[in-house]
Each structure stands twice: as structure tokens, then as C-alpha cells.
Length: 216
Image (cartoon, rainbow, N blue to C red; front, side, top):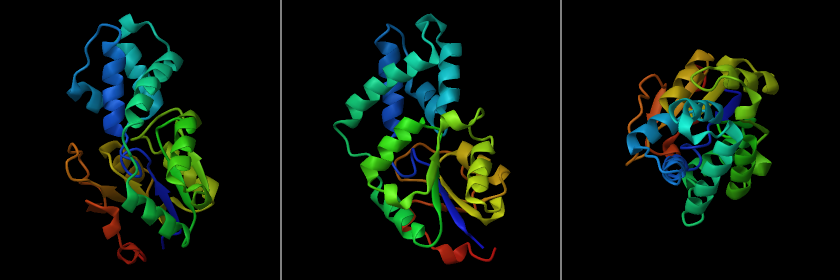
């Protein structure tokens, strides 16, 4: 039986990852270097912030910036882009609110805790989320299952009793490695991720039906 619901944030509840890709490109370009769209997507999609910063330091050593400065500079560009675009995914948010009436909900994300807290405020779902786990809370990002296993422990439920909502290959792999069921969101017009391992793939979480996953 499903007893708890774990939501990814970026790409699942908010459509932020395209903005992060553009922000990283602008950050690098502001320093006289080039980052392709293909590279930015491979680096950002489904990745924890700690892993993104490590890759930036490795692949762009001429920046000379530490992880904290990389975060500050990329966040500055991201916020400029976000200021002109509503990135909430309404149907995903409505599903989270609905499921919160049936069992505990947590957000498990590769974003920083501050970024998650701001997103929760923006979506107005603070009263529905039991807690959230961000990149500072674990050392290895998805597809490592640590973050999902940590959430199950905090909720005092077995991993097999958790249902995860994800949008990335890394997130799906992390959920499965944790022994959890996983529903993947593949929205129209978004770059393809290998979601074949998910128990169900939907183009809109409005189509989710809990009964299909209970008792399995």
C-alpha cells in the first residue's frame, strides 16, 4: 500500500530547468566563454546542485569560481529570467494538494534548501508539505537513492510504501534504486529523458490515478 508521496521539484512541480539551462549559459557567456544548449541540458536536467557545481569547476576551470560563487552568479541570471515567466505547473501542484489529504507529502530535490523554500512559497503549498530535502542534506545526487531513502526514514515508512513523482532519468533511477514506485512526468515539448524504468509515464499529472498503484 502507498503510504507516502515524494515529489521532485524542478520539472515536476515547476518548469524551472529550461530557465536554469539559460541562466548557466548566460553566466558563462558573461565571462567571455561559451556553453552550448546541449551541454547545459546534460549538466542541469535531473542533477543535484552539488553535482552541477562540481562539473562546472571541472569543465570551466578558467572561471576560477568556487561552488558558492557559481551558485550566486547563476541564481542572479535565473531570477532575472523567472521574473518574466510563471513557471508553476498547475496540474502537478493540484495533485500534490490532493494527495496530501491522503498521506504525508515531502519534496525531494537536487535544488538548494533556499531555492526549495522559495518555490514552496511561490506555489502556496507550505501547508501540504511535511518537509523537504535539498542538496545540502546529502552528498551524492540522483541517481544515487540516498535522498529518497532519507525521506522514507524521516516519514517512518518503508521505501516500498512510497510513491515518487519525477521527470528525469536520474530521478527515476534513484527512486527505483531506493525500492520505491515511480510515476514519471514527460511534458509535451520537453527534451526527451529515458523514463522507461518508471512504473507509469504521464504527459500530465492530472491523469494520475492512485488506485492503479495501490496494493501492488
